[in-house]
Image 1 (cartoon, rainbow, N blue to C red):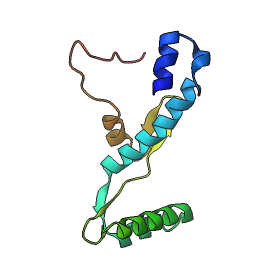
Image 2 (cartoon, one colour):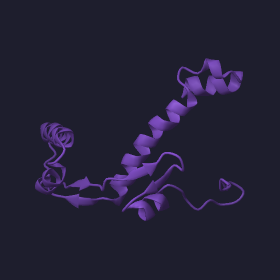
Image 3 (cartoon, helix red, strand yellow):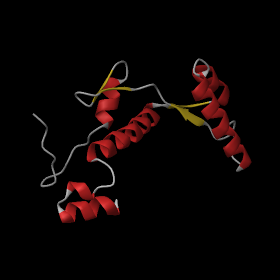
Length: 122
């Protein structure tokens, strides 16, 4: 963040350590995960494994997270995890598409108060 602020102050794009678009795309991945989480429901570990079972990477990630939580005193049988839906983003419009698009797009913006309103893009 400090690098970005310095680049804004200098008005030189060359001062950025990473291209602004790359930062935007990286942040979008995090936002997609947060939107999925907010659309998700609390689930048992068994339900999560059942839903992620067709994807070895997801299953592995869940098992590693489960072990980490267990090592730190969190039992997912008592403290449920959240299983979010798979959300998809159209890269051209930067809008959610597919089965969960309506709920996801509603979370992608907010109602702004004047004079801090962000105008809609054309």
